[in-house]
Image (cartoon, rainbow, N blue to C red; front, side):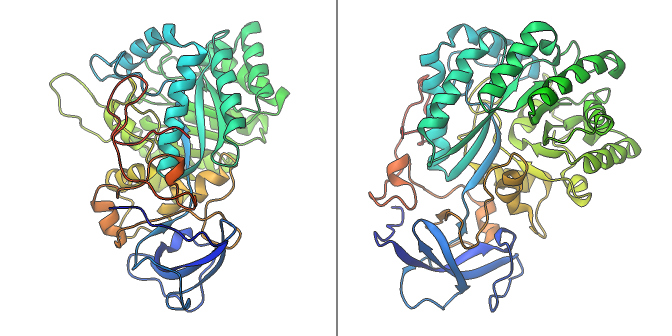
Length: 450
């Protein structure tokens, strides 16, 4: 099926679009919300932005979507573009987290600037083709090799400004921030306009050392961020070991230090297995300190609970509903794609949202959960908000008229690949066509360069 050909005129209407009510900044008078939380609207597009919302049937002419869904630009708040697409040369031998760490560490011998840039740009092209307008990537930051990845990030962030908004966060073990190398890395992050990030998973047994033994390192990390006015983005408790309680330690440290910059915490898997009282206290601290949570449902399902010859006993995701009920922002994101931490994926946030709905029971009702790949991550990492309201850049129309449950039930609709086929690009539409990743693996169709 070809993509929709949008008019070349500077202003036009999209007629009879299904829009999740959660995407709207305010109700549209005269447009009722159906039982699935969806509104049927006409949208006037002017200068590439939504200029007007009106009840379905208001526009006299325009592109008839026949009830097809329209989503705002998607925001992927947690990815790893510097290690994407290395699976074909550095596969995970057993599918475990330990196997992923070992394989990716060994692969770093290939990571010169050309290698990182080719894979990084390929991942961006995949995401862009799938309707993503902003991403935060983590950069493996083992000093001094970290300088290569950060140099690639700065170049592509600047080159692609106006098409896809990029942020970056460091990722390395917490202990890497001790001493002069830690200060040098923090300076590199600050000079790149980045976010200070670390991981506690992988320190000996997953996160199990007594919190007191890590508290000095944690305070050092916070000090480096405070001195440079940096936000934080942390990989923590990515394990099924209930001795992993770093989210609680981070929230308590932020509260004690009166830390004022944004904090996003990713994974937080172990919290789902903690005693109810401890989990509730941790969630309360996160709400009090303003911590935002990002869950990575596909990667966590892939890694967590894996053991040879054993069926997994849990889903690996954090307490999304409980966080949301306490006012803690919860986003869902792609995480790794075709590397040792996740063998699959295509930076398709519609796929991520669909799987999050199934894995974390975000349905019946869908409520505001569609915002978890749009407006919620826009606020948490500080991107431009992703909503359907006047003044916002419009997203992508779905060429297949489907209610919400059909979008969740089926595979992602055929969509254009690469910049030339992007909804709103007036150079014409593209068809689905296979392409190869830089490492030679068939990528499922996306990935034309910008």
